[in-house]
Image 1 (cartoon, rainbow, N blue to C red):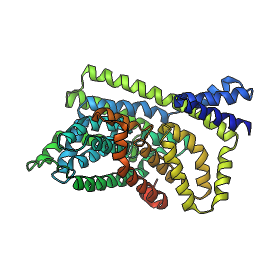
Image 2 (cartoon, rainbow, N blue to C red; image 1 turned 90 degrees about the vertical axis):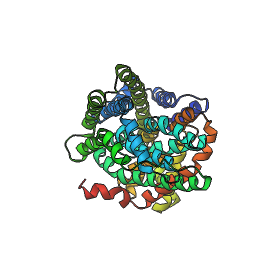
Image 3 (tube, rainbow, N blue to C red; image 1 turned 60 degrees about the horizontal axis):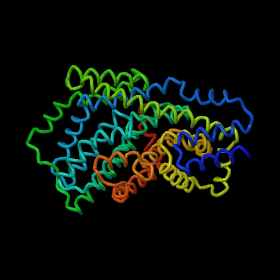
Image 4 (cartoon, one colour; image 1 turned 30 degrees about the vertical axis):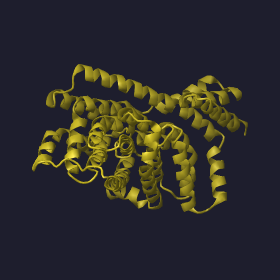
Length: 426
């Protein structure tokens, strides 16, 4: 029992004094290894095995693809299509932002990338139309989280690797939950906008949608090529990520002719930084999780939860509350890698499908993108909208509540998650 106390004691101490999550995870794991007299090399080997896998190769490719799409003009065309589709309805620009996040999320697989791509275009437009700056930022931050639920999804790749589950099946299972979350945000946006009198979207001339779709046809085809190839079995998710990079390069250079050398360099720089950040989190989180498993922490947690109640519904509520709370303080990838080996055995022992649990986990992490104090999307929206995190946090409360409601539905009705994979025989 000494190892868990050292592990969690050091971990929470480092977090309290303001250490980065990577340092807290790595240092606490290292302390346990040294206290036990284990060889330091074994720690490095354990962590290295986490990133030495074929599916992980999809991460840098999806990140690069999302970065290139901004420079290639694909994200701008997707946003314009969404804006035309919204039309003159109340809160139309907010509806456009949510729709654009769905479109871009079907390509990038990243919440922060989706928030940045959509926010740079939609937040200024919403402010010009009379929307409050904090509201525009909150809506964009909340809808940007759809990027990790609408497949392809980087967190789903991480969960698939950690739980040894099919990434293709996870992608398929995430479609309906992503649409449900987007629908909930749209309803909340419409009700708030109508109450506050936010102006409707632009009244476009007849044929505007057809023209926008014609101009953005290659942007629309991007998710069709990527996801269609995965679901048809033409290529794996990892291969699809590489295909998306070459597709974006081809469209940006030869079709749209907007991808220049400077944009390409900037995309490579952001990809290198983000990929390094993701891999080092995986590296340290795996070592941390290995110690948890070796000391049977998952088993103890499972036993304590089952002693409290035998009701699956109550356990789901406890798990969702716990995941949302953890998501407020830990980064998404670290949350998935730490929580999965702890909670997955508990839920499986209660008859929960691992794919079902994985989607609920990712959706809870999606909420964490727009909740303080560590909501990455909120920081991005805050800088674009030029308002404080506190202001955005207050405005985001209705959207967070809607998302929590949808997550509870997904947890209590597993067919909402598993229906589509079963329909296609996965």
